[in-house]
Length: 302
Image 1 (tube, rainbow, N blue to C red):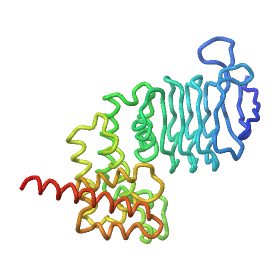
Image 2: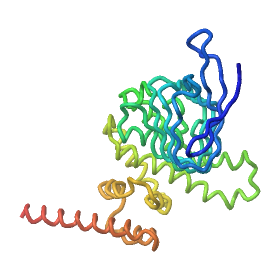
Image 3: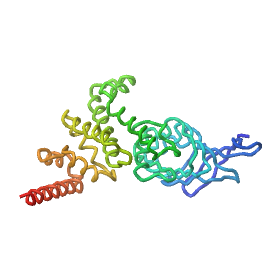
Image 4: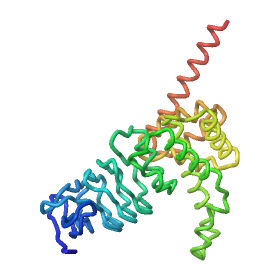
C-alpha cells in the first residue's frame, strides 16, 4: 500500500502512488502525485499498471511552467487542493468525467486559463467555468453535474454580482495583509487590476448570454458605464488588449452600450498603442459600420 512509481511519457514523467480503491475491497487505484517535463500538452492516462487512475493529488502540478493543455480521463473522481495552482501557462483543461469532486484553489493563479471543459458543456460555459475558478474564486461552481444548468447560471450570476460590488477597500486588503512597504505606490495598480478583472467577467457574461436575465445584463452594463464615468477608462480599455479570443466581440458590446462612443473613440484607439493595429482597425471598422446603418435608417425614415 502506498507504493510509488513513475511513467515516462513523450511529454515528461508522471509520478504516482498506489492507493486502496474507494469503491471495492482489495483493489488498488492510482493517484497522480507529480509531473516532470517541459511538454505543453499532457493526456493523463486512464490506467497505469492495469489499475484505474482515480485521483489527482493535492499540488500534483503546482506551479508548472510548461503545460498549456491537460486532459483528465473519466476514471478520475477527485482533483485535490491546489492541484494545478500557479500553472501560469495553462490555457485549457478537458475533464472527461461526469462525477468528480474538486478541492479548494485547484486553478488558483492560473492567469491564462481560458476553458475548463466538462462533458456536454458549451464553449461559452467552458469559458465561464474558467472565469469561475480564476477570477471569481468560486470552486463550488466546478460541478460537472450542474454546469450549464439554469440553477448553475443563477449561482454564477450571484457570484459575479458579489465581485463587481466589492469596494475599493476590499481590493486593497491583500496589500495591507502582506504589509507591502510600497503599498501607496502599488495601490493604483491594484485598483486597476481589480477593474480589469471585473470588466473581463462582465464582458464574458454579456457575450455568453445563456440564461442571462435582462435585469442581470442591465446591471453589468451599468457597472461598465460607471467604471468609465468614474475615471477608470484606461483599465477598461486595457481589458481589450492582448490575445483574448473574444476581444473583438467585446468591442461590439461596448459600442452597443454607448460606452465607446463618438466622443471617446479616438482616445480609446490611441490607448491601444502601436502594437494593437488589428484591434484599432477593427474598432474603427465596427464604428463606421454602425454609422452607415444609422445614416441608412435616417434616410429610410424621411
